[in-house]
Image (cartoon, rainbow, N blue to C red; front, side, top):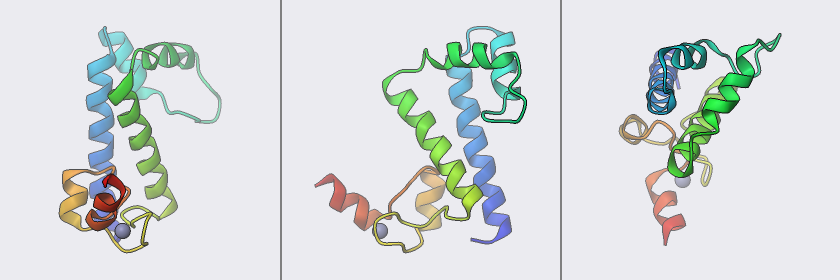
Length: 114
Ligand SMILES: [Zn+2]
């Protein structure tokens, strides 16, 4: 995956994360803290506790989505993004654009669901 595409998907993942944050935050202050807080950043700040408290409101599907976004961003950082975890072939751009957190190509996904 070239740099332009990596940038594009980094942006899509940031946007997906922001969307979840807007869902869970109850005040503007909470939203700002979530958006400026970098998980695992050096020198944990006072916002950590609030972030933990706010994110604990996420449940079920939303929690799963956030975990998937975390995992996708880690893959992007590691240079492993967009490669199927089942068969190690590149996942199509159309699929990634529809679902930026996809771990599997379509055939592997179908195999796993059956
Ligand atoms: Zn595959």
